[in-house]
Image (cartoon, rainbow, N blue to C red):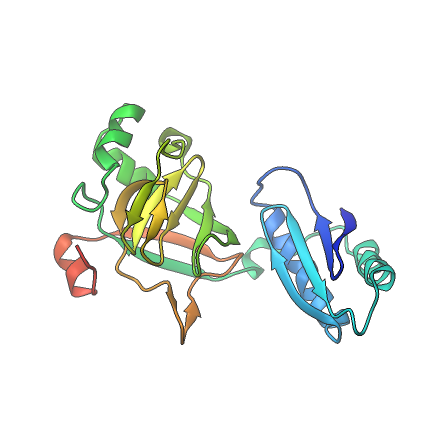
Length: 226
């Protein structure tokens, strides 16, 4: 791990160079240690795919002490990362998979040489780690999808993607929490609210998400909008 100052009040810890499911538990373990030991002057921490950004209160500590204190925690780390099952929650999200709401479902299947049902089965056939949060409030970057359905982002993003749309971009999948522009390939729609001003974000970094297929009627009964 590399610890380096990146701003007047920020220290970045680099855990690796490529997206790796095994990194997330280690990143969150270090985040928790820093919060426990340095919480008096840590303002915020932002875990991502391979890094942890630590923001500190410059009124209480300078960058030399911040780097030194964080480096000491890194040096003391047990060589064994925490067990995977101790990190994050298991969350199930219902999805109505159909070309009516998954505008790229048929094209993705055709390009992959698969039937639409095969794409759905492969998407629902595994759980996905939330690697990072971003782009929009409640938007969780999850991976990794079955290599057979991994598909590049669209060359031209849509100007308006409906809330709840489930997409694939390269090896990742995600659900758009709100209406926004977007370039991911849309394969279905989820009726579950992923972000609100009162409950904030349903997903958090480290959670594991599994998608469950539902019918059009179930989608509408659960509050989904066509």
